[in-house]
Length: 354
Image (cartoon, rainbow, N blue to C red; front, side, top):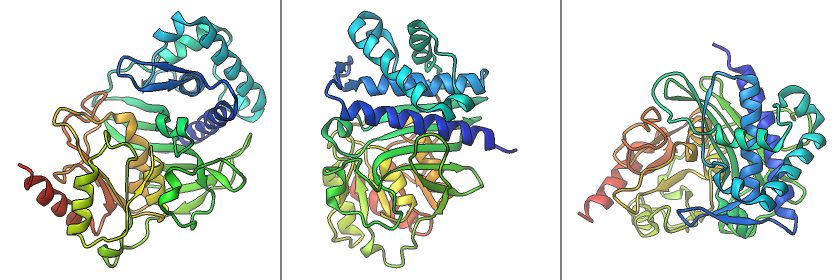
């Protein structure tokens, strides 16, 4: 079955939403709210979610969507609500190409709020469900680091289409990745990448642009002949992954290079095009469940670039059990050939803590 319409719709929707988030970052009034879990939420989250969901629902009205945000707080905050409405309207006017092809019917503030609230699917094993993270790496966004706009299509619980916009990654797929990439990020000339993949069709990168999509270029993970020379990536936030365990695993694999820390699924994109090799996201709490929107798009892109993703026990990630990966613990990403060696080291380090 062809997913060309799904891919084009997702690419255009994510590209437009990513440009909206860039405009929010460069403005003086970013604005934040505090959710019940105390994580920051920007107006970019809400604006991006409204734009993307309206486009997906316009093209595929029967599809379900698992989105990170809801509009409860916005319904109580008229100032914030009006600010987001202005941003959404501006984004639609500035990108006529996308509006013509994928424009969803956001004609009022209520339409916008209802679009945001349409990301309330419970997920599951059957049917078509889109997993959306409108700004993955919100803290990275706020500090000027890496962040991403992520959209993945699950078909009967299987990641099938993945699109990620990374405004602060270099366009050049061969650009080296060092420790500064997660902290000294910006969206100057030569930065801003849109990644896409369809199961069985490979992965691509292309420069972010306004209007028509730029031509995509095939990407692939690099071969790792000597695992001790691999570059591994981890989250900036210690609350997202155990930095100490990660370092112990790197040592067990003979890796001496410092890890590269960056927020968001920009890590998936970086290893998919060969800038890095291994991603370790190890659980910091026994009760923590990974969210499907934090991984669905990245898993498709990495797999189509020649990599594999599993949990700390080597089990495939199960996206069919709801809004979280509750049947899995942690996430490990590596080239297919070396993933078993990485998993073995992970098991050894974690077992030693028991």
